[in-house]
Amino acid sequence: MQKQTFRPGRRLGFTAILLVLIAGCTSQSMMQDQPYRTDVIVSSQTNQTSKANQDKGGVRETERKRAPVSIAPAAAQLIALAGSSRQSGALDQSRRQLEQAQRISPKAPQVYAALAEHYASVKEWGRSEQFALKGVSLAGNDRQLRQQLWVLVAKAREARGDARGAALAWQNAEIKG
Image 1 (tube, rainbow, N blue to C red):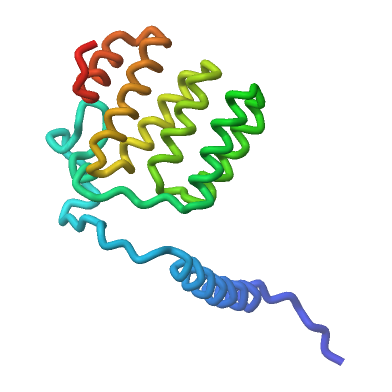
Image 2 (spheres, rainbow, N blue to C red):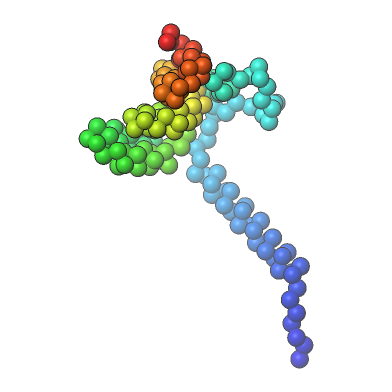
């Protein structure tokens, strides 16, 4: 009777093939969950970001030209509930509701505006600024929402003592501050 020996090459090959098959199935199912977007901007310089193409706040000009992704009704309802929770003093519940809204509509700038407002209300200025900037990058050509988000960025920077950054944010909000 012949003894079977361990052959790492065979197992590695089988494992690689199995991973490729699983990855193919996963990417197909993930693509089906994503809505078809007609607002994607195709550029020949996708991997290059020039300084001329940057705002002072770090948001590319091309991101302004597209329409923002609409928010799911369930996420909008969670944002409203979070506002009520925050007003009644249930800050942790409000945060959880906003995080759930983010999982439902991860590309909706309104979710990031609500998260930025929440963190500003609990004086977590770094997180507030972070979420506001993410919202700006997703807001597209929604001028009013972009202005609201830049105001949140400016207030967060002022609260952290960054006068120069706050001035730039106020300038981006087109408000004399």
